[in-house]
Image (cartoon, rainbow, N blue to C red; front, side, top):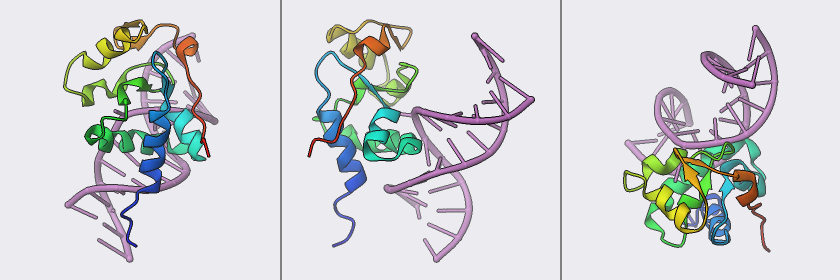
Amino acid sequence: MKSNNDNFFERVYEIVRQIPEGKVTSYGAIAKALGATRSARMVGWAMNASHNIEDVPAHRVVNRKGLLTGKHHFDGTNLMQQLLENEGIKVIDNQIIDFEKHFWEPKVDS
DNA sequence: GGCGTGACACCGG
DNA sequence: GCCGGTGCCACGC
């Protein structure tokens, strides 16, 4: 089998899908859940591919600072911010308010 | 097979 | 406490 199944990518999607509504998580948290805390960058890369997957609410994934860094990768505007606000999360200037309060720790559900 | 890139995280100054 | 540079890991060409 070739690398048709991107374990790493699929693993990220699996976790992001588990993000409850009104909650957010960080790349590092996801990467850590995968056992690659330092590979948070890869998580972002995986999310880029997630653009083709609707089940992956990438807009709920932000960096550890609670900043919507990847929003620029979305449709192009504050769509990501609007989505988060729609979930009950306050976002100002691309930054999540009470980020840690809305922080959701991803875990590998076997 | 090798180099460059990437939506971060951590360390040092 | 803030800013800059480096490091890790996997994908794309």
